[in-house]
Image 1 (cartoon, rainbow, N blue to C red):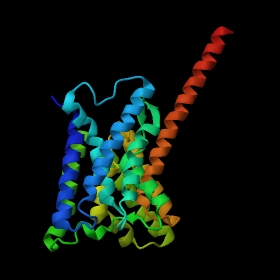
Image 2 (cartoon, rainbow, N blue to C red; image 1 turned 90 degrees about the vertical axis):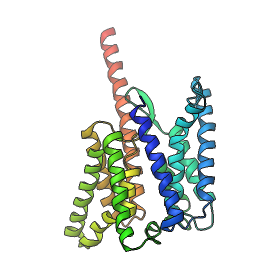
Image 3 (tube, one colour; image 1 turned 30 degrees about the vertical axis):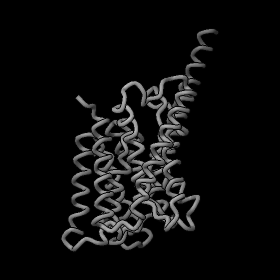
Image 4 (cartoon, helix red, strand yellow; image 1 turned 180 degrees about the horizontal axis):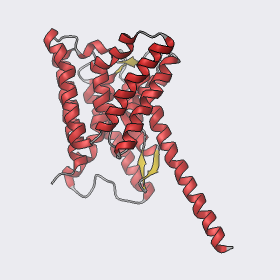
Length: 298
């Protein structure tokens, strides 16, 4: 019977692939139609090359070997999701190189940024979000987030209303049944609403504007398919809730500081803090073991 991780990755990959097809044929995506193909090819190549490098460095077999084509297929699912998400959410005008750059950064970040989580070294930076964040920092003057209107540009009034409902329903099913990230979503959305109320109360921000973000397709996509990445978020419900709430708090702080592209920066900051926290816990554990050994020797 397929494990939950594989089912989640497969369904995520299918969902984002279908959404890209609909985006180019129905919704109004403005990036060239060949770009998702190029982005996916770049993601596949980068994932395979760096897995071979990691396998050589750690003296272990590459994770895509030993099970034939099925093993390669399952191994490349995360790269497929990252590549399509980056291409869909970044707008680089007529320049594809920033998109490829973001894909490469997102995929390689899994090998470069790891922490001792649950007794194993695991990546802690959300690949898609990290690639987009770095691209925005490096090319912020001529690269931006895809404009929200392109997700519903060519849809009529009824279909335009149904798009976020369909995405939210599909995402809720995946996150409830497979990734089990509902507590994270609850913390994120609840915290988001609270920070909007606080900004309205203290800084006189329009409440309709602050809360209206939650009704857009971009926010629904981000909530169901970006922040809930099972590989870079906690598995325990309480920790999930804290993670989602922390992302909302950081978002609110960045908004007060007038930082743009706030959703992506907020999640990157929280992921980085989580990774740093695991390394600090590891250092304290080693220090405690060292003190215990010294005491026993004395």
